[in-house]
Amino acid sequence: MEGLGDGAPTTVPLAKWRSDMSRAFQYYLDRSTPHPVGRWLGTLAVASIYVLRLYYLQGFYIISYGLGIYILNLLIGFLSPKVDPELEVMDGASLPTKGSDEFKPFIRRLPEFKFWYALTKAFLVAFVMTFFSVFDVPVFWPILLCYWIVLFVLTMKRQILHMIKYKYVPFTVGKQRYTGKKSAASSSSGTPRD
Image (cartoon, rainbow, N blue to C red; front, side, top):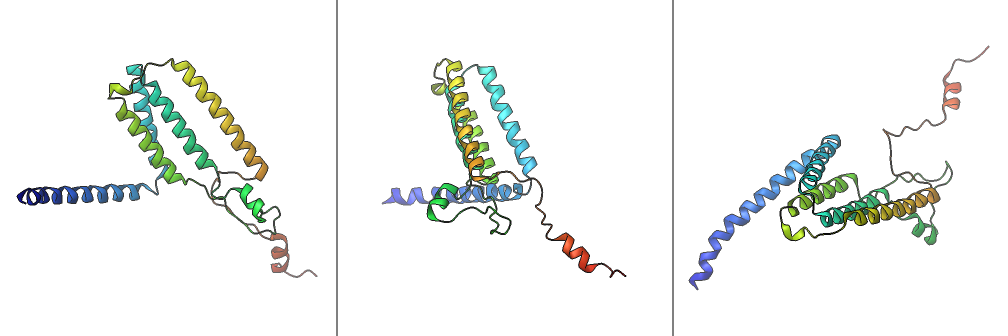
């Protein structure tokens, strides 16, 4: 019975430390949310370090291939709408086609912040995996690269055709402004003519 009591005091400080670290990590993650440019520059730096490490080691191509497939999967989620228009059309509801229809904003299946976070984590995990020689499987890397390029082109072609078919654009530039009926408002507010 003494063995049970000996382990309890060591696990409580460990759990407290883990909870404190998790809370601190979440605090800094929340603070980074309104700074997308800084976040993406940090991810670019992590990706550059990973690429330099691969160039220096001349190996770990399987890890890079897996990372590429994962990035492609994230990109498809980032470019896809949360509600698939094909399923909406089947249910009877359709996308707005006229100006008088209800406005439905484009909502991503994978929001930008989650896309950034998953991408950064993927590069960090891949970087750590390069320190273990068990993941350095000898492969002919040009075949993997060609296969990934073909997969990328086919997947993006399908995604772009889907965007064209259902007339949505997954990118917004700046704040959307509504003009309304300027001509009617300006003529009614003007001075009367003689």
